[in-house]
Image 1: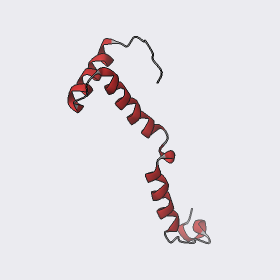
Image 2: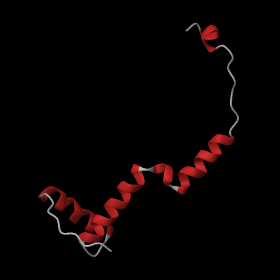
Image 3: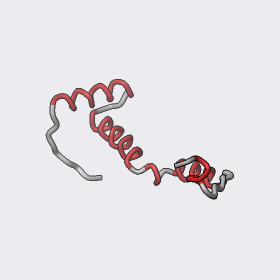
Length: 75
């Protein structure tokens, strides 16, 4: 595990304290790790196993073939 010392603004410190209290965590370090895990999940959803499962299901769904979309709909 990496140890880091850094400064955070007062507003973000309050957010960590709220998260710590809301989730019943022991310290702000745990709150920070939780927040970073949430952000990491949202940054790259394609790495999530649930994303891959859902993408596979979508790929198996039937599709419609459209030959001349512009002519049919006057675009």
